[in-house]
Length: 262
Image 1 (cartoon, rainbow, N blue to C red):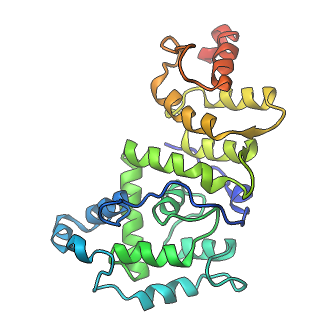
Image 2: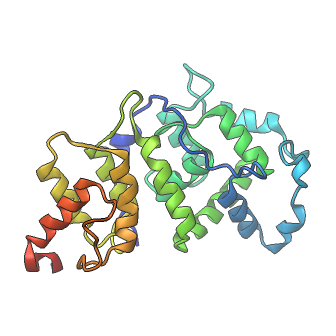
Image 3: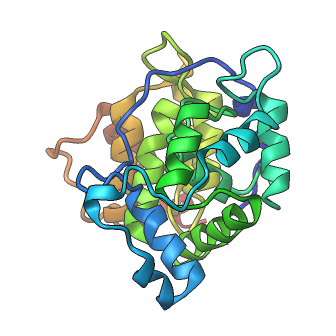
């Protein structure tokens, strides 16, 4: 079971980010995992509702006006093209979703949210219209499908969400994310059993990285490290294409001797 963490500090960063890798399927314009979740949450019969590829971009059964109205009820009073942190929290509450729940991050990925605590009107309307969902009740159903897929340990979804998170969490104009923000999301995403040595990893960075930032290659390759390297580092290849930070972490851990097993 994943530990819950307070995401209030990182979620208060309300600046726009340049969109990262898009989660949208290039062949059908659907967010691939979310489409599967919707089908799962509504049962096998939903397969019969599949819209031919030639019409998927404008599903006739969806009211774009309804989606626009839903978004407007949560939009920022100063910029109606997006939600602010208060609107995002109210939207999560309407979906019976705790803003600190990991599924909130999954939903942010699936709706291609531009940055922490923000939903974009255009991406919101486009995302839900592709799923033929235009009511809060329908959105709640999708969220439950997302939860079921996330809690099942779906590795493909996990990796996509993990890779999405770096750009999502990065302050505009910065090349790296702060160590504080990285730790918050690592705690959310990589707590044991995902990464057995997460606490030591955090301690190592806090003790050895005075710059207190995390570059993207370290973030991305930590996923592979946590997934593929044995807990005793027996299969770690020092000559592999690992960032220097991970080489130094392994050396630091080996220097701890039997404390590694604690």
